[in-house]
Image (cartoon, rainbow, N blue to C red):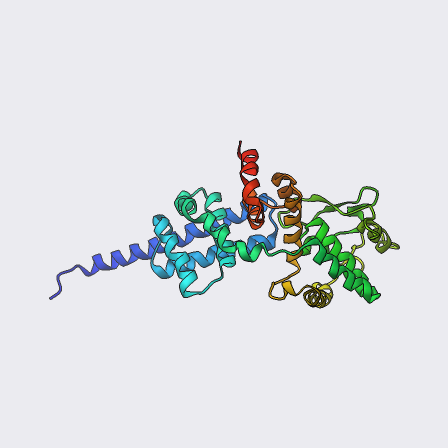
Length: 332
């Protein structure tokens, strides 16, 4: 006969269930605290939602593996990222986003369990996405795409021309430029205030305001393009409502044709992956190449941390010589 007390076994089971409930309740409380802190910091709802999804993905894996939040260490995170890379085949770019979301989460709940892992591996994540994230084209290539739209002599093509030039010159993200309103533009100075940014922190950017090499400057285009619009109207409105921005597809379907035209004109770009976001990368690289201070480029681009801007610096072949100078100025 088995030698154990049945009541004692039941009590043990109950204590395990209670511990499980407490862990889940603790996690829920921490997630609520995390969300409230992010809201207080002014982070957009969509960004918070994405971060929470990534954090929950980690804790779901944690639960499946039988780990708890109380015993997290460098080995736990190594196993998790190894699982994503080998078993789930998750891209380096997505792994990087998950790493950043987890980093923010543990910082906010004041849990240093990830510090050792980050110290050892964080830089390698930036290197892993460097090739994809820093693909760029030359300003002369951007001009070829602008010429493509200009030759079309259509209203939709003209709108795409202006949108492309503003995207490139401001180094703005697609959604940031899409939501520019007439009141956000200083038509005297050629300065645009990007209000709805990824970081929720408004920032000022500039467009060209002087004609160069016989080309019409972007500010002149903006003045012409803004005729008849009021301050609250979108600079790039939808066809149905001037208060709402145009759809992304309204630009995308023309942009892919411009990229195709560019590759025909410049065969060296044939195998290059050129997206709308490539324009932002290209402008940041262009600013660094002009030897603007990396800290100023960081602010202009709206990067949250200097490490992101440093990725672009590493993308330039000649930056090997100037990078130490940048680092000396930044960290002194």
